[in-house]
Length: 299
Image 1 (cartoon, helix red, strand yellow):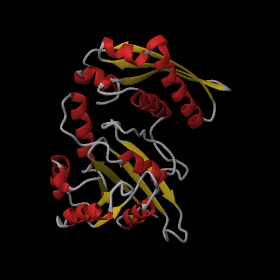
Image 2 (image 1 turned 180 degrees about the vertical axis):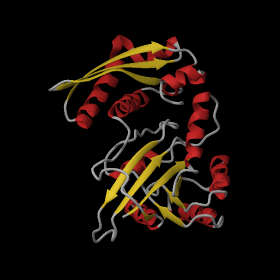
Image 3 (image 1 turned 30 degrees about the horizontal axis):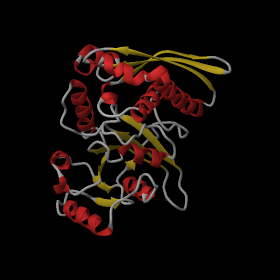
Image 4 (image 1 turned 60 degrees about the vertical axis):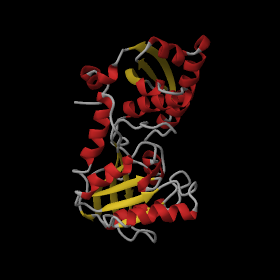
C-alpha cells in the first residue's frame, strides 16, 4: 500500500478546505467565503483500494492548514505558524492558488518558503470555473517558469473538476508504507471539535465584517443519550457591541445560527440534537496566550 502525508497550503480563501472536502467526498472542514475560516490544521484521511481508476491501494492523509497571511494578532501568528510548520512534516505539498503570482505578495512569500522545501510540490490552480482560458494560461506560465513544481493541475474544488487528477498525481509521489488509520476513518478530529467548527461556520455565514474573526466557540457540555445528544456551547466575542450583533433583535440571529448548526450536526451524528447556545464577552482573547490555549489554538 502506498501511504503518506500531504500538506495543503495557500493564502486565505483560495479553497483549501473545499478541495479537502471534495477529495474525501464528505464535509469535515468548514468552508465560507470569508478569509481565515480555517484556524486549526485538520487531517482528512483518504483510503482507496485498487480498481480501474487507481491501480494501487493507497491511504493519503491530507493536512488542511490555515491560510498563510501577515498576522496581526497572536491567533494570526498561531495560524500562520501552524501552516508553515506543516511543510517540515509531510511527504508532499499541495499549494493552491487562484490568481497570478504577480497579483500580490502573499503567494510570493509562500513560493519563497517552498523554494527551500525538498519534498515534492504540486501546484493546484483552483476556481477554474471562474477563470477564463487566457487568464489560466497566464497563471500557469508564471508558476511553471519557477521550475519548482513537479505537477501543475487546474481544478474547480466546488464543482469537483480534476479532483481525481489531484489524488492520482499525489499518490504517484507516495512510498510503500503502513496503513496509519482504519479504512473507514475520514478524520482523526473528535466530534466535539467538528461540532464547534460547524457552529463557528454558521456564525461566519450569518455575520458580516470583522465580527466573525473575533469569535471563538467552546463546547461546555456534550452528552450522548440513547435518542438524543445534548450540547451546550458558548460563543465568545471581544466586544459588547459584537454580542448584540450575534444575538440579534429579539434573539433572532442567534436562533438562526442555532437552527442551522443543529440541522447540520444532526446530519453529522445521525441522531436528534438539543443545542443550546450562549454568548459571552472575552475582550482581546485573540491576543491572550491563556485564552488561545483554553480554546485549543496553542499548547
